[in-house]
Length: 150
Image (tube, rainbow, N blue to C red; front, side, top):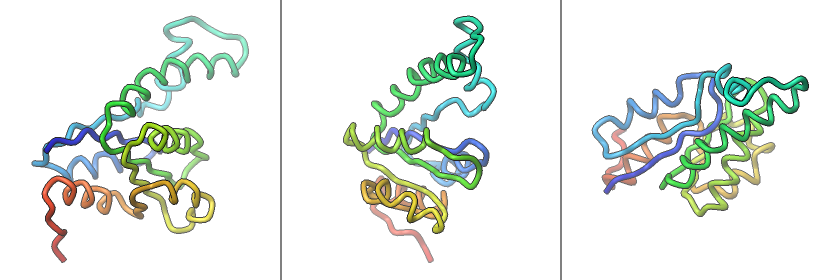
């Protein structure tokens, strides 16, 4: 069995690399948004030209980024969305909602103190984890049927 996994959400930690490393040897293709914050924020004006107002600057970038994000979400078998400690991550909530709307399996990662704020997203998820290692263990179990050791 092969899995396509889209890694959505916060971009300020190495959680994606943790999951990818923990899944070494498994038949998984990982996809992700552009995680270079400046590139993601400025792609619209870098390609399509400058904007006087910040709203239109951000809007252009959001639309261009939506091409990559939409493709990743549509092609995914499993979407993992992490809500991190830094910044308000409305885009992560949007990606989780899109995954559910597309009928994708959804794994959510967040610290326990976010539980109340994310209760509707958690309710739509197949699994809610606190660590990237737990999400990786779910992927490993999905492909092998083997429980983690310990």
